[in-house]
Image 1 (cartoon, rainbow, N blue to C red):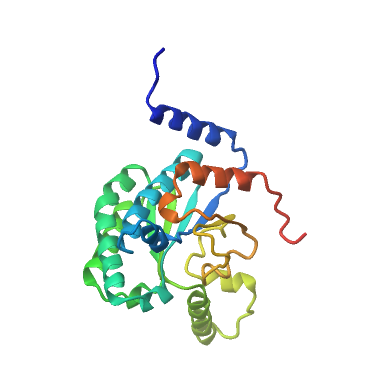
Image 2 (cartoon, rainbow, N blue to C red):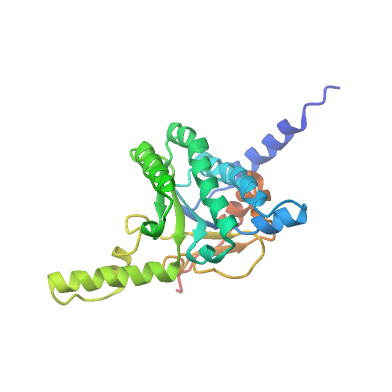
Length: 251
């Protein structure tokens, strides 16, 4: 009897999970937590977790492409992360540049549109700013998956920045009627729908200042799995969990 390699079996399982999902979310947001704890558990340097996290992210964006998810928003670096040890922050900056170098061509060919979102004006590393502009330009005309990389981002900072924009508009256009629509129109991403589904890896039961306005009615799933181990099979299982939920929007 011929025994096929295990990867054929794994592929069949993943395809089976994907085929069983009927209610695919339009927009999925992910808090990619647990990278340092993943490394510590394996007695590796903390920064090693971030390198393996890139492999997990590759699995996830490929799963989004395969299932037809239109928007993927990832929490890559928060405004609070700037207070981590300097060498760790510098490594993350270097890794982002390397990730862009590694992934840019594949993302372009896969019709993925990349946007970096946050207080990018505070980034001091010129090479990083240049690479961000490079990948955004290279993928800007793509029409498949839209992937938003939230970098130097904070939900409160976004709302503050929206208020500042509205204040300027009020000065130039007279008094404005401030309502939810006006605030939404002045957030960082007014042209994409709010997330249908928020996934947090690593087990912590908190939002961590992520998309505070936009996730008001998002379905939420928290998994104990650290992000470097959150691969395609786990992601598709989470999407299947979402597909079985009834969204009521407070009604």
